[in-house]
Length: 96
Image 1 (cartoon, rainbow, N blue to C red):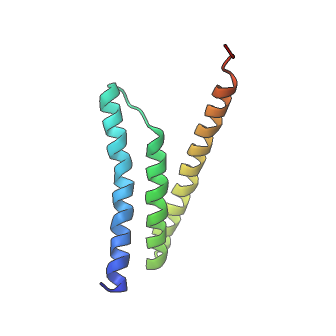
Image 2: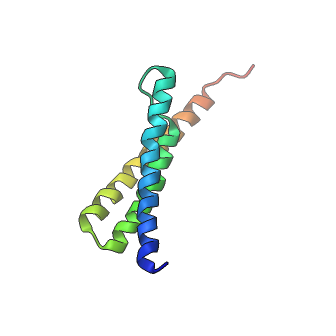
């Protein structure tokens, strides 16, 4: 296996991680019979986006790099917002 094959595998791994977010979202929505975006969606987005950004940097593709880098900011921000909401909700629970 040469370096090009390894990089191709990295690219496909990134695509697989990125695709998993849609599968997770779809399955969760079907189970609840409403559209939901579970937290794991954002983790798959982050993992897939980071892997694809690595691949894009290797390919020196400025369009792909820009798109993935922006996506990583958005996914990270969503996770930060979720974490903040959970902290606020945990603090608002009255002790028994």
